[in-house]
Length: 58
Image 1 (cartoon, rainbow, N blue to C red):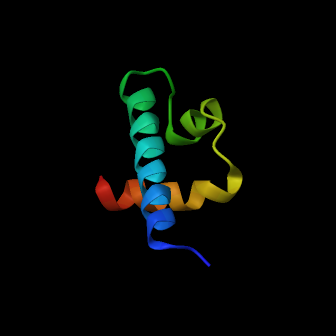
Image 2: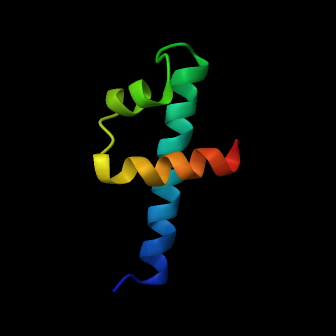
């Protein structure tokens, strides 16, 4: 069972990863979001959640 604090930590980690991905793309270090996720070694299981997060906040 996930506690409230664990959910907040997970959301914070998701937000931090999404921000890192955006910075890599904005600074032309990565050519797209997928490449940025590869560079950051984002787990395949987290990629869908990150894409949803990015779509919601862009």
